[in-house]
Length: 379
Image 1 (tube, rainbow, N blue to C red):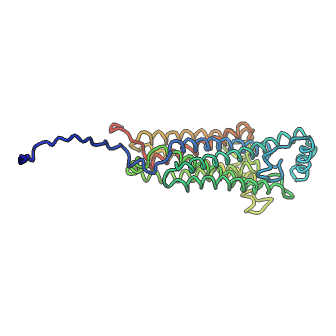
Image 2: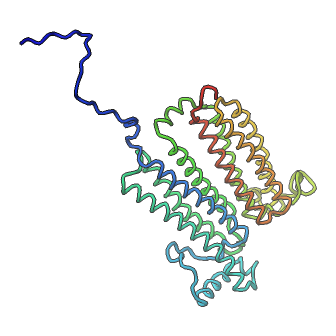
Image 3: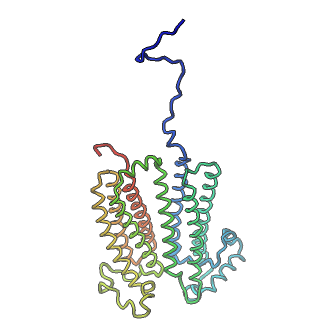
């Protein structure tokens, strides 16, 4: 029997069930364990913040030269007997910091500065271990997102480089005539810590959203604001390096006056006892003066960036740059208070942690300028 032809408008029924297409199946390709890796990076971020604080306290308590050898593995074990302590103390007695500055120090006093430096180095080893365990875990399970393996290895390599730079810094203070580490090496050591912190923060922000969402957000990015915030980030980094130079020669404990330096705007005779080049690293008055002037310029530029940021159509971006200006203002006040009180340990370390907060807030504002968060039409 011939089948009756069907109308082209007739609905065709089918008993076959079509499997629904999974939402986001394309987006999930190559995404890996973004959330878990982000949490791991945030743990590393927190540890590096603690490391910066401990390092600052190690410098402020003059503890950095108490361990005179670099033993990456065996150095993780502290002295366990009276004989071991005497050997460590004997090694310390041979360096200029003891003979010219701390002669007569007791073993009990030496133990205090030793534990500060040992704790600082041990924390560095622990951070390296956390990175290694996390990376091997995600790599072995194939959970690293496409394109992220190199970035995570890069962070680990920076951490290893930081350990080598740390010893390079300490070794400068063991030479004849040196009572402290070379200030420029201290600046490089601290600067590298902030570089690591910056990459950890940036990567954690990127992993907080899907690649597809980031690509979509970038189309709405504010190129001018991103460029200006990048400049502010670089300027803040320069100011952090200048602050390290101040800490390296205890320049913050000189000229406890503001807004003048003593009786004048300029420090007195900055080039009297040294060459012009060395004065920019070793004259306490000149180093502090440069740090002050850079702080004023950074604050002024921060206001310019804030004025641009407050014009953003995105509420989250405006709030981010409001936070930057607020922290920049607080950090400037902390700097003035640190100077007026001759940089006591508790105020100086708050000022250093303030630099960390400012650095991260600038990074946050820069991120939102490049990848604005979605918002309603009402904004």
